[in-house]
Length: 106
Image (cartoon, rainbow, N blue to C red):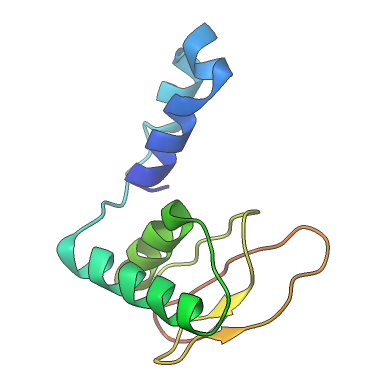
């Protein structure tokens, strides 16, 4: 769970109606967008854009966070990406996923 997740959940209709379930979910430790994570996410997004691909800026921020934390992030919003100096981008099938690990594995 990241701070960006909290932001996204707060945008939802369910949060406006009843914020308690979201607050219960967010009681888990949150990973934050540090300077290093922001730079990694921005670099990743720039690489993708230069190669003709793109993901949502929030997903790029989340990718940077998970890379810095050496943890896996899965989201249904974008393409599968292997974290490396040059990300490998593959077209998604069905529900797309961004899965990245700091060690370069998916």
